[in-house]
Amino acid sequence: MPHFEIHADDVSAAKTFYKGLFSWEFSAMPGGEDMDYVLIEGRDIGMDKGVTAGLMRRMDGPASSGGPIRGGTMTFAVADCDERYQWALANGGAEAMPPQDFPGIGRCAYVEDGQGNVVGMITPAEST
Image (cartoon, rainbow, N blue to C red; front, side, top):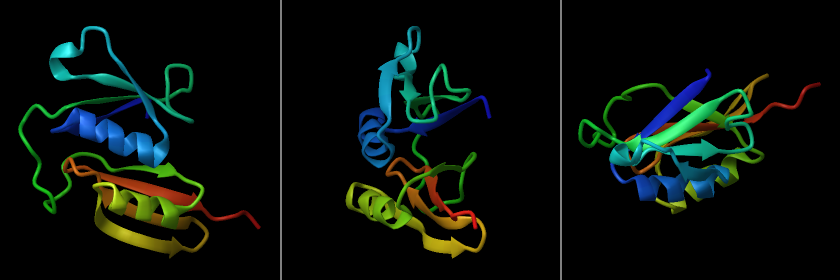
C-alpha cells in the first residue's frame, strides 16, 4: 500500500483524534487547500518511509455512523491495544469491535473515529 487517505467531515477533529491515538503529525499539502488536504507523518508513515498518507475533507457528505464500511479499513500496530482502544472511546471514538485475541496474530480492536471511518489497531502476538 504506497498511499492511503482518510476522509473526514471535520478535518480538525480528525487530526486531533489521530494525533492522540497514533501520535501522527500533519502538514498542509501544497495545492490541497480547497480539500483541506493534509499529509500524515508517523512512525511508519511519511515521505521517506515507503507508505504515504493523507487526511482530507469528505467530498460526498457525511458517512452514517454505524452504517456499512465505505472504503478500506486500516489497521495499525500499537504497543497496547486495550489502552489505545480505551483512549479512542474516551476521545470521540465509538466501538466497532472491542479488543479480541487472535491466536498467533495478536490482540486487535476497531473503533469509529467520529468521522464515519473505522480504524483498527493491533498489538502483534509475541513470537515464540
